[in-house]
Structures are given as structure tokens and as C-alpha cells.
Image (tube, rainbow, N blue to C red; front, top):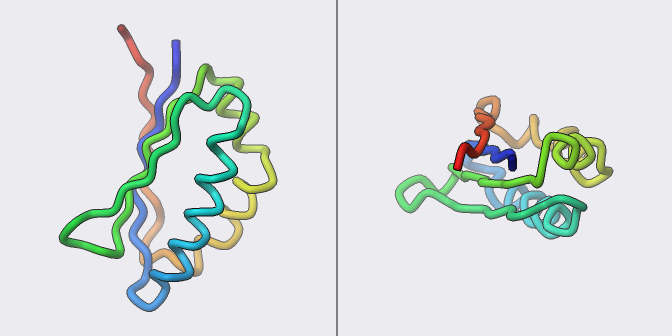
Length: 96
């Protein structure tokens, strides 16, 4: 069964442009990772500094490989200084 992650990220007001650039790099690289079924980025309409990433992976192994990728590690390294608070990440397993 596939694995889906939902990440909610809230960047600092003065970091929105830089954060979006980093998100764009992450998404563009991640959609090409082996086992990536989808990797979508959304922005709240009413809160421009709040984003949601919805990603789906073929299996746990694909997700683990993604988390070892250079682009993922780069984002994890640079994002804490851009975030207003830690990201909230929920993992879901598809049942049907």
C-alpha cells in the first residue's frame, strides 16, 4: 500500500519569498524521486505564510529513500530558520 504524508508549514512573515523558493526546489526535485506518486504544494488562501505539502509514495522504502536525498536534507537543514514554528507532519496509509 502507498504511504501519504501531509505536512503543514508556517513560515515567518519576512521569509515568505525565500521559503517559497526553497519549497519550489524541494517539490521540483522530489517529484522525480523513485517511487514518488505525487508531490503537491498548496498555500492557504487567507494565510499566505501557511503551506501544505501532500505527498504520496509507492511504499515506505520509497519514502525513506526520499528522506535520504540531497534535496530533502537541504530543505530540512535550511527550513528551521524560515519557519515560524515546527512543521506538523502526519503520515497516512491508504486502506483502499
